[in-house]
Image 1 (tube, one colour):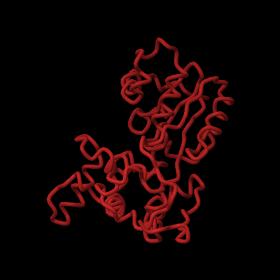
Image 2 (cartoon, helix red, strand yellow; image 1 turned 30 degrees about the horizontal axis):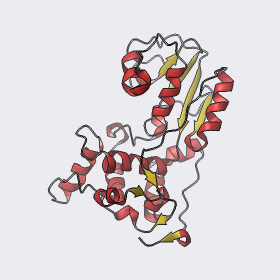
Image 3 (cartoon, rainbow, N blue to C red; image 1 turned 120 degrees about the horizontal axis):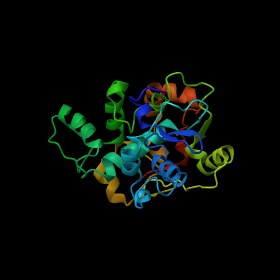
Image 4 (cartoon, rainbow, N blue to C red; image 1 turned 45 degrees about the horizontal axis):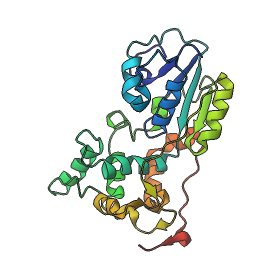
Length: 260
């Protein structure tokens, strides 16, 4: 924890309340950073910090003292790995296709160059293509938005000093438990991707282009992007996450599906 290199360099330390937050991208990190900001003194950050939590905390944390944190509680949240991967694909490839700094663009390039297609970010790639490309990369070279979650935590995880581990799937209750443990009065809501999801599970969504998904206006339920082959591929690649955090293999329920 004394090492200032990644991922320790991303940890956020609250010395007043004696805890360390480990924010993991695509694991309610924006909401958790909003929560962390609310635990600080109003003079610690600029007035507009809540409107730009990622940037404000990145600037603030550069001067943090992370050397004297013995006895501090370690706080982290995790998320079902396949669902996190679907969310990362939708945000970074489908929604932000026209944002030059979006990490999804590098994956689009990787896939389309291999297939001899002209690079077309608007058309994008399918979720199946995205998963294949992601799983081909070594962990150390992966973008943080789809890098395995256990790599963000101290190298000896799981261990006793990961004191407070919550799940996005139980965000409000777990955050309340963490607040009670640390004796905090503040809270926040989990802000998901700002687009609508349909409740129905749709057949074949894993093979729809990013462009086709955008045209729908509302995304299919996240399980729509999974089939037996993709579940096997994702569970194999993210096996350490599934084992460390106790998530069950995603179920495929064809009886609930209907054609688009």
